[in-house]
Picture 1 (cartoon, rainbow, N blue to C red):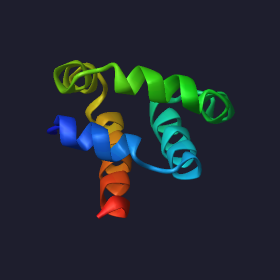
Picture 2 (tube, helix red, strand yellow):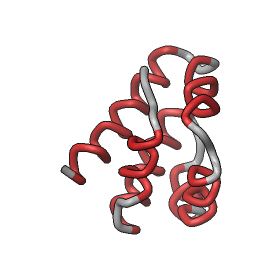
Picture 3 (spheres, one colour):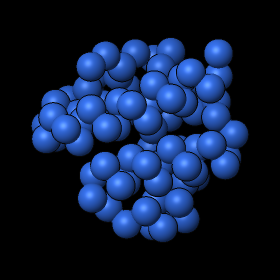
Picture 4 (cartoon, helix red, strand yellow):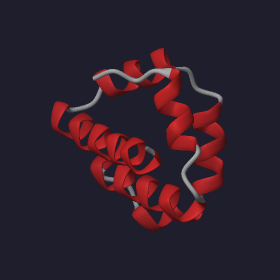
Length: 83
C-alpha cells in the first residue's frame, strides 16, 4: 500500500460531497460510526491535510489487513474520480 503526497492532495481535492462519502466509507472499514464521520468531514479533512504519507502508511500498517485494503480501495476511488 503506497500513499504519497499526490494521493493525499488528490483526495483532498474531492468536492465536499465526495469527501463525505469517502470518509463514511473509511469509517465503515474501521468499524466507526459513519454519521459521526460525515458530520466531521471538515475536521478529518484538516487532519488529513496536516498528515504526511509516512504517518498514513504507518497507521494503515497497524490495521487489520482487510480493513486497510478497504480503506485503500476508497482512497483509490477518490484518486480515480479526479483523473
